Length: 403
Image (tube, rainbow, N blue to C red; front, side, top):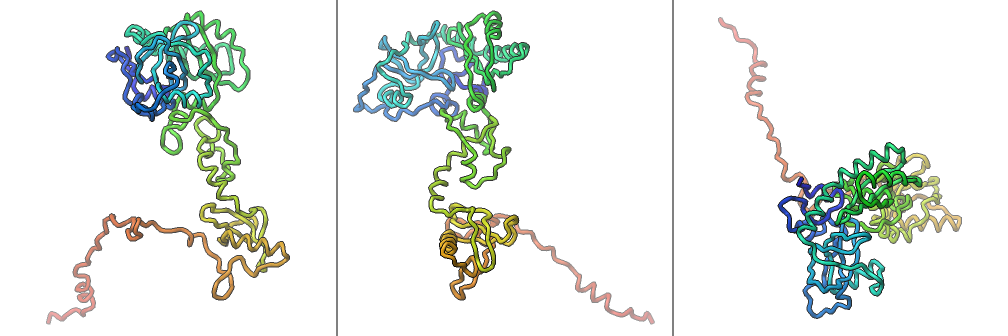
């Protein structure tokens, strides 16, 4: 059987196993079971090995399948299950193979997070997966790429405006889920008929969005790290251009869009901090009236609490850095019908001294503020000019008479 490395598993949704011929016992890879690096649905059982904590749902177990799918099942046969065990669970139709991800007291919190009623009818766990079950399952997993590519060809021949991004086989191979994206409603009845005849399986079509597709395929973001939607994001919150406006970012679609073509999810990460910092900021659309002229807002540094103003509305030349408190003061004076002499106040002579933008920038310093960033650079040695003085003296001397 062909070996599928960890990178491939990460890109298309890791099952938590090494798909190799040697791994016939279904042992999980350390990266999947011990960390959350390649499994974004992984949850840390922080109540494990605490005997004082009692669990109210001892018969419920969380089972993980591919990278974006997991569910809760009842352990009706009271099997001695541990995290990382491969189990055969009830499916419709047949059975599926999954990995036990959470058990014990932590189930209470997982049920609450997923909004699942523990008293509802949950599917059952049949048994621990046998070696024959895992071997058969691996054969179907190895077919996923081939089936996905072939299904794309069939969809293209039918001229369907859709893209099949991933395929997930059921553990017994009787059913497969085809994940696709489409901008419009697609009539794929003929597609299902052709694929069912060619692959000899039951077909289930599941539409996903562009963000979900990027999470399943994976990739590297602009920050140089693996995509957040691949590693840990499970619920996608809507992102709007207001998030960029609050953070004073340039509204450039190429810079604000992620791999999925939508606005980056990370635009919401620091949004609350920016909104809290801007609560007492004045209105940037309101100009400041002074005796020198009308000053217009150019840009804002939110965390330094300063604003840049210029007397030319359409140019940022000769801009002046004004603290927030001073801006509020000028606005109150304008409301009262008064105009200050200048934007800034000097403590000595009450005259304005414009502060350039460069003066607000700080040089690099360490914790003590003493080391320079170029302290390890090798200094170039100056070449000594040898006998230059003697040569100049010889040129100045008049030629001597040989007589």
